[in-house]
Amino acid sequence: MRLFFQGAFYFYKQIISLLSASATHFQPLADKNSGSQRKHWHNWHRLPPSWVNPLLILVWLIVGISLRLVNLTAKPPWTDEFATLVFSLGNTFLSVPLDRAIAPDILLQPLQLNPAASIGNVIHNLATQDSHPPLYFVLAYLWMKLFPSDGGLVSLFGARLLPAIIGAASIPCVYVLGRVAFHSRLVGHLTAAMMAVSPYGVFLAQEARHYTLAILWVIGSLTCLVIATRHIQNRTPLPIWVALFWIGINALGIATHYFFTLTLCTEVVVLIFLALLQLQTSSKFSLLFSPPWRRIYAVAIGTCVAGLIWIPTLLENENRGALTEWIRGSRVGLDWLSPIFQALGTLIAMISLLPVESSQALVVIPSGVVMLTFFIWAVPILLRGIKIQLQQPESRMMIQVLAGVVISAIAIFFIFTYFLGIDLTRGARYNFVYFPAIVVLLGASLGVCWHPPQMETEQGKNGITSIGKWGINGKKAVMLIWLMGFFSAVTVICNLGYQKYYRPDLFVQLIQQTSPTPVLIATTHKTYVHTGEMMGVAREIKRANSLQNPLFLLAHQDRDPNASTIALENTLKQLPRPFDLWLVNFHAPVAETVKTCITSDTQSLPTVDGYEYELYHCQ
Image 1 (cartoon, rainbow, N blue to C red):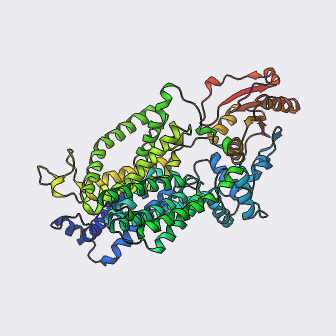
Image 2 (image 1 turned 90 degrees about the vertical axis):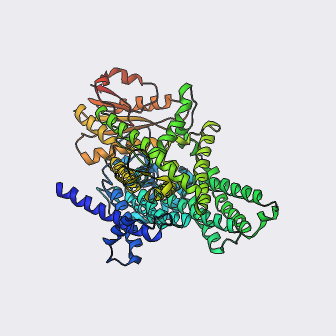
Image 3 (image 1 turned 120 degrees about the vertical axis):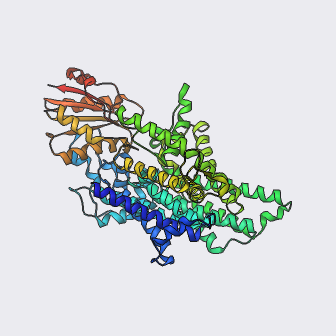
């Protein structure tokens, strides 16, 4: 183990020296008189300079894909992932029987490979039963054909591998965004390095969902916005290929996730800001009809057309309201402050996330102290970096554009939350709409930290220039921030951060330890979300293969809760005794037949994330 850490430390030092070599040639803020640059470059003097840039990108890519593949299937899938699996196979949840006892194999039937299904089935089932556009699901349909079944079910590894690869692809793409925005390969590399280890990025990449693909389109769209900003500044026409590429990226983004339109809204806000800024510097209103603006208007029209084609699908979908109930609701008292802390928590977790979600105080308290100390030290440094970039004429506008995207996105989230009653801050994954902009701003700030101007550094007692008040020089500060991101990514990989909402594996272990007799697991059912909750349990039972003839009941209810009660009553009358009844997330009055069973004291039993339960022994 000691040799492993020594080797890892040596590798890390070599990468840092390689980054310094790259910075020596390409960073405009660099101190040309620095002797340390020549020392670092000496380590790589045999490497052709043209190789340094692609080699570093490859390093970040290897780090990123490695983090995203570790423990890829260790965490059980949750309801949203089951939706991806079922719809991507061309299957439907409607095949699962309701209001009667069924075996696990019947419940899991939608997860079986379906050779007869086609892309048309995928699109049709999504349009009638889900609330998402079909692009990612069609790609997943084609992708999962490459993987054999796993115990008769679709391969979870194959399903999660696709978003992991796409998530890793965002690393070189965000490098391009950082480099194009600031004309600096150093900023591009630091942006890619932080994307590789971002705990938020790793979290999204390890789920069988479409968010990493949406992030890829966000990066592409922001890159076009950056290019358009430069043409507006220079008052030159936007190249036709850029306009067409921008429209295509936006169309693909909307076809991947409807919330991509929130990214487009932030870009509209930024473009309005640029228009007002241009009108202040020139009184000629005709500038807004100059060549760069005319092509931007064409991009807007093309994007609107690409978005409008999905409106009929949305309007015809009768399930979209029921599927989004969890982000709707009223607030009382301090609940009004929750969205603010939820948004802040997501922002923090894009950079740093230690095991503060652990159930053990001995883990939570030290982790919280370390994170608090880290941010007290790092935030002033990062803000100083942004401030210096704002003082540079060549980078000021790009900082304003990217900061405008972030601020506009957060403002839109709060408008939805406080004025429309749709709390978008509850879903951390929705912040994909501005996540790349955060990473690029971080890379731009770290670029200044790596080579701080003379006026912004403090000379230490040993002649070492430091940033801030803690005597740490710029390069070490960048290393520490990157290492914090790396350990935060490891936290997510080990399910100690961004923990799964549902833990069916723990629930099945509890059943195994508590119920020696056959079991009936009953839940109330409204949408396929509740089917997915039970699918998680059935999948774990199938993997464990230790329970005696377990049965499931999905007691459907629309508006009348008593419908679930009646279904439970009828089912219990048909089952031979003895058996144990587990009411899981059962939101309906208890049936009279249940009262004839012995109620188990669940106070002494552990709680399980995602599964509220009551246990009855029916003799």
